[in-house]
Amino acid sequence: MDPKLFRKLSVSGDGSCFFHSLVTIFYIEKKGSIVPVPNIKNKSKELRRKCINWLQKNLNYKVLETGLSIRQEIEDAVMVEGQTAKNANREEKYTDVNGYLEYMKDMDGYAGQIEIYANAELYQRNVRVFNRHGNKLNNMGLGYELNNNGNDIFLFHNFKKKMSAGLHHFEPLILKD
Image 1 (tube, helix red, strand yellow):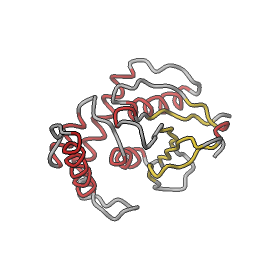
Image 2 (tube, helix red, strand yellow):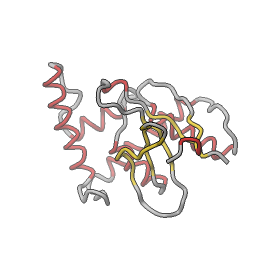
Image 3 (cartoon, helix red, strand yellow):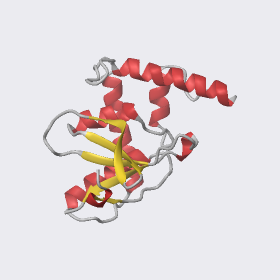
Image 4 (cartoon, one colour):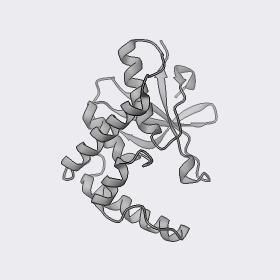
């Protein structure tokens, strides 16, 4: 996709960049112009809370793309965290589904595919995530497609294989008129 179709906005890289990005997109859509979001941290915290509540209530929901339940997706994340912690010689951040959900309530918990599922369902909107490859934006495999209503949410992710996990960052992409 041509990056010239979008305006990429900056959000804070404080562990809540995914939620800051969504809040920014929703606010700009509501206002009809690109303006700073007042109280973005509080609004992001509220969106995070909604997301985690949805996950807690929908652990048996089957993800369309994988056929796995939210619980199974979180169990996979727990397994990856265990291996990552072992390889890094550190304590695990969470060891089970409830621990994952508690961890994600914290403003430092980095969102990923599981939280993308939840927000796509909450807002009944496709979430499309891109990274830059040369002069193009490429879909990087993150995201979730629910419908064809054309009301997609576009995000940029600076994913690079050699980056540490703490340097991954979401930013909102706003379609230009």
